[in-house]
Image 1: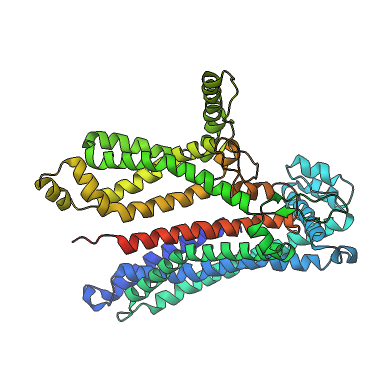
Image 2 (image 1 turned 60 degrees about the vertical axis):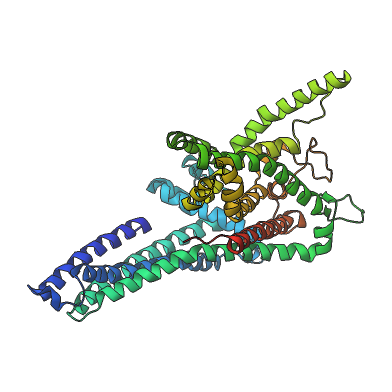
Length: 494
């Protein structure tokens, strides 16, 4: 029985258990419901939990552990030359065996018998079923594939029996435990509390897992390349040098990438902050309710546009426009119609990224401004201040800590952008201050280094993890500082 069907069976058993629990609780209570500690719905929930939760945990553990045990058992029958080969070669061999095993389940009995007898073309028959092979199958692979399917079927059968038996056992145990003094409500709420804690821990555990995975691979990189050469290097050239060259590992200087990231992010913030902040002030203080109800959602639509679309917009429209307008300006000023703004440049990427960030600045700032109490506005207006003076002297100072925190969070969003930079700023890693020339960012080089068939054994690939952990630390510091600003300087209103 497949996992999805087994989950459906558990759900059906749980629903039946819920109604049986309620019926038994009502039967024990009779006409005097106050004799029971908990309501019948809690007794039904109690039986549902015992019928589903232990079986569900067993299913999760079985699905996680069983494939490893099965594959380890099958691998013991491999020829000696395969067992002594490199791990990458063994993984490739086992990938072919998995494909053959999956194909055998799709073939008809006659075709499967043909393959087992060794009289058919394995690659042709499996390709006809949409199961391509990564390499040429060897004689021992058919036997291994058959053994893999056999052990997998046995594992699934045992899993089905064990899970359903445990579910039914939990059903009978919980029904027998129902009594007037059973604290069913307390136990059900304890399970719900544990579920809430587990759900809230997912984000924390995910963050820890991301950090651990990046640190593990980054440590391998720093064992090959000194940390000071990475963090303080000014040349990014990760290619292998020619034979006999002094530095055969290339150069992995972070400084050009970090400067490009900060430079493009700065240009983006220079575009996004004034437009976003002014639009937030207008929406919160000047716009009529009808206009606000229409304009605010329309402005926030920008946040839902995929970044690759912004990249196309920058590459096809904004970049050529800036290039052509610079040629016209140069021609009017000097008579030489040569452009001084390249289509791919810091200005192009920063401008389009700033447009993308406008809804973030506007929405966050608008929420912060509208959170300022109405009494402050009315008090300022009652003292004779104009609306603009109230905004400048009262509302913005009161909302400033929250606005600063929102801007810092928006900056961390700009630092992590990739697609706009790839299409609008290029991939040139260099140190320069001219915003009309191309530069690149850390995220772009992470994509470049992980593109291709390289294994995670060379510094050219492992450097992506060092760049990733650096970018993670940078955005984390921005977010922590934003939270610090908000908590330290926020105004408390009654």
